[in-house]
Length: 308
Image: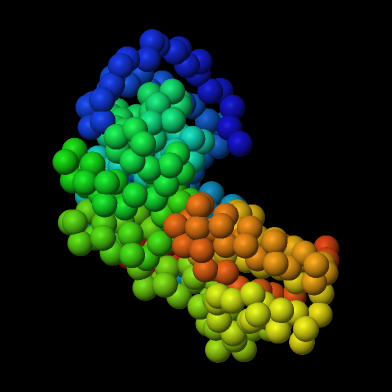
């Protein structure tokens, strides 16, 4: 995705205790061969797009409409609330990418990590890093689902915002509400939007209301094996069991016969609970070799939205 990445030097890992700030390696500013809209802005005031950038937008996003381009050039700054320090509620590559952009914008970053991730690179790339909870309080994955512990760190370290990345709590509307209730900026969709679309059962209902064709599926979540068998008896195999609150292929099991259903049902629920903190699942007919098409939408919080 990018080139010209500067080298990164490692340093010794210090001993630490829960809640104790640990030194971070200096973040080498990365240089890229591409231009993104966010690179043109400072964290103090994201400036209106220049004519040159408007041309980039037109080429990249295929927006020949002059009125639309003029609106982008004249739009108000895209950040409604200025912030200077963001906690990244994630780990690994996801957190690293967010830190890279945050540092380019001049923002300070706070990393969190489970005890088992104490040697992970994302911890040392942030300006500050904190262990989420004492060793043994959470599982390695469960630590990143510990909503109250994460928000407590953000508040204690005087963060202005929380960026969830993707996965973990990124589609958890309750977490988004808690972040906002703590006086922090939630970098993501509104909780109401997550409620409607983060939950795949509700998303199916929204699609149906909009007359969008959907594959046959359960009307709501499935809690009992008997209901799963009833759906399969009516619609046949193959089917797919999906985590209602998940994504990324986790909490999903394809079932091609009745003999596989019981074990697949329990495994899907268990994996969904472990990965997303919610074991709710539903069932759809499985389509062999479908075409997967996504349209990414980007909004600036000011009512301006573009598709990528």
